[in-house]
Length: 83
Image 1 (cartoon, rainbow, N blue to C red):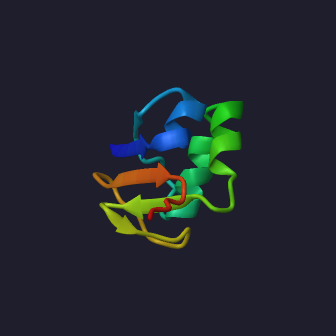
Image 2 (spheres, one colour; image 1 turned 90 degrees about the vertical axis):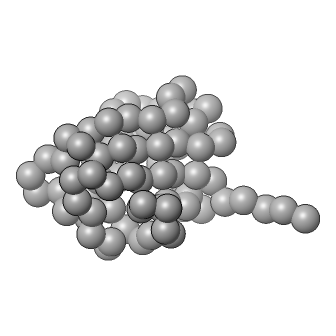
Image 3 (cartoon, helix red, strand yellow; image 1 turned 90 degrees about the horizontal axis):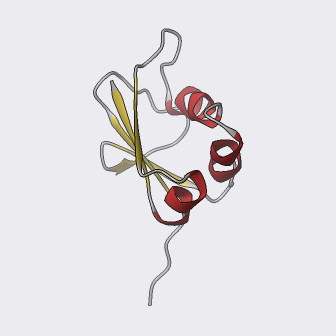
């Protein structure tokens, strides 16, 4: 199982804070997983299509080519600013 977490406005857009997904055969990187999660519905498609979206795998920043495996935790969140 893969745990997928959504934070801040992403969580608000998709109206859920986490999903548990079985990692399907043929899904081996973050980009492929993101495409799979987008198929959960229009709100997921819209929320995860933001070019500024940040993603972490096991609490480390990641890019779409990063390899994922069963048991990983994936977190999607908007860019953060602070002062």
